[in-house]
Length: 176
Image 1 (spheres, rainbow, N blue to C red):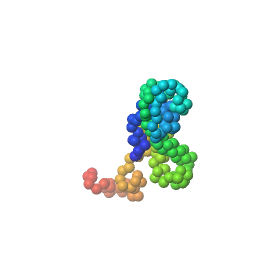
Image 2: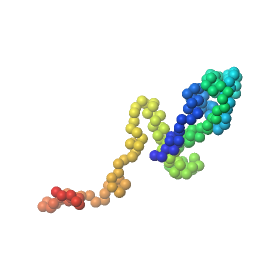
Image 3: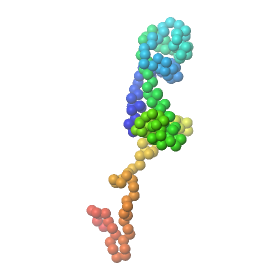
Image 4: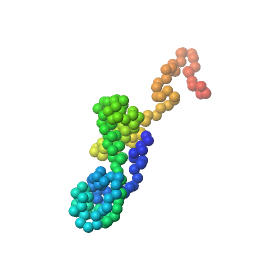
């Protein structure tokens, strides 16, 4: 599976901020100021606009780590894509076909199928976390081994048992 969302996630400034102020406060910060520069207050951060959004304690920790610094807060574009993937997965779980989901989500069928794969992977990860059970990796669950060029279909002709007095049928190149 070509998982461009997961592959594109590298350590960013949001990871550094989350290490200081926590995930919830970081998401609030990115949701409010994503795609812009902010100036971290160096004095009385608990009275700043940032504190009203992310909380006083988180604002104090942010100010302690980067007092007076100007920080670019990235957008959470991947967050929106993951939300869409979850929505596609839920619609698929309710029994809707890919073309119907594509119409509802105003996406192409290919985009919907890709989002469905990502959503299924995320749902399996959440279920695994809840149960504590370690499941087989995703690629082993639904990638059957296919032999031959017939897409896993059974051959139309089968070897019939030999009649009495005849040699059993052998594949070409084999010797008995």
